[in-house]
Image (cartoon, rainbow, N blue to C red; front, side, top):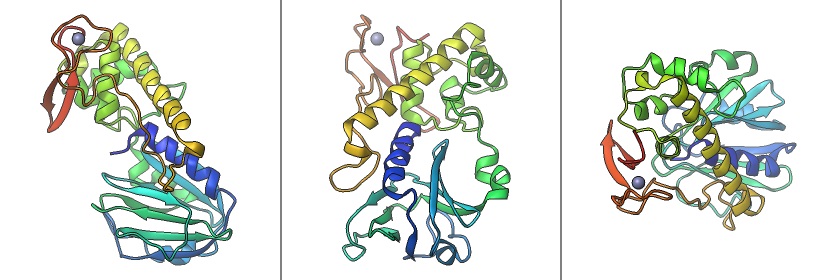
Length: 275
Ligand SMILES: [Zn+2]
């Protein structure tokens, strides 16, 4: 599932290809993904000119000159591809946008947990999916003081709290594990036990793992786009995520990376280094 760095890489790649272009055909090949498409979506998109692309948490927001925004979430298996002809479609290409320069953008999603919505600009702040999101971790307001106060109200383990999009927007399982490893904090520690010094360390670790991953996304892909036109799923080396049994990087614990399951999700960590 794409998290903030992957979504940001997709946003940058997509912006290079579609910003300033006009949609000449919007084709919806089914009525829904995770939930139904909004009424008259194809009509609203047909003829719209695409402005800036923004990101909020794991959502991509595409500005249109219709005074609205196209809101995208990739869910578990969603992919965006650009280029090629509208004729050579793959299975699960559910939404196909043809632009005025011939570029074709496809939203492909075999499992259909993705989401597409149309948001009136005036309604953006009140949109149910956006209104409850916590701060962007790379914005200046996200620091140890904020994070410590937010976590102090949580009765869950800290790992689960970091996945709560109301506390911080855009983190998922992978980067929560990586940030806790970097900060030297046990994923099992209760969120409210963190205290100011650890909160500062954690906020800093969150920012650095995300910043490095975004940089890796930009440098591993030409124009952020893979050879097959897919956007955003770059190769990146994670320190602990997916490394059960491997030696911990920079750690002499000897035990290697452990995996436990928390709230149904795998957590990878070092029992010695993370307290
Ligand atoms: Zn270790």
